[in-house]
Length: 297
Image (cartoon, rainbow, N blue to C red; front, top):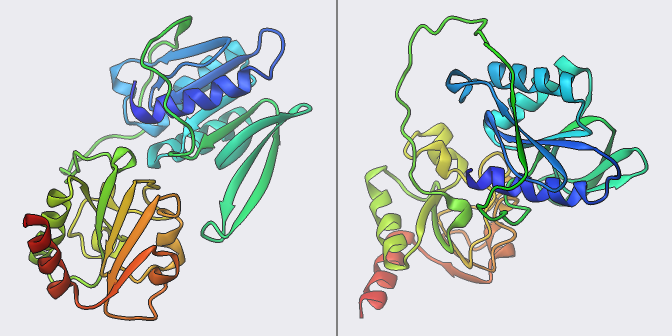
């Protein structure tokens, strides 16, 4: 069970403790469910389901129709959001998106959701039963041990589309959500080759490399998995080092839980300095080599 499923399982356990009777939670990440308290279901749609939002939603819909769960919780990953929306439509249920601090209120589930790039917290509610995507990085991960799980076979599933071609996608092997130190690169880097400076600093600090949205989505210099921000990964390292990142609200929303934020930028008025604990106004091409020399000494 991966880290996202283990986080979602914690959310399920907390909710299940508030329910009475034989209520059922289906906690899932991709085609596999995680653990929770009370009665928790593993939905098995076979190997062909893995990674296909349509088939995952269909597998869960079949299981939910038979078992009638009180809620279906899905990790708010790129695939998870698609699955939740399609599943809610299939079952004609309400859907809460990117929520955390889930709780019961009468016959409804209430969750908090960041809006306006994290400047405001909105309270959203849906009547039971419902579907909800749980924001990644907001719940602790449940231990690996599996107890009291029930497997529900949903039978044969068939794709409604034909696969024409598969293009290889460059993926990162680093899970930024668990990194204690992150060095993140932004538009201040002039070329892709110059990212070696950020990589060297990350290595010297024993950390991982991340980036702002333009470097992954616009330029394609780094994998999407390294994109940190409101539409990317939310992180909370002990040290977050922002190099050449202006610090727009979308990016800050993904790093605000960091214990210490340090930033290097040539613009003394850059928004990143408003949230940084330590800031250096200077050219990263001069500052980073100087820091590396100090670390080597």
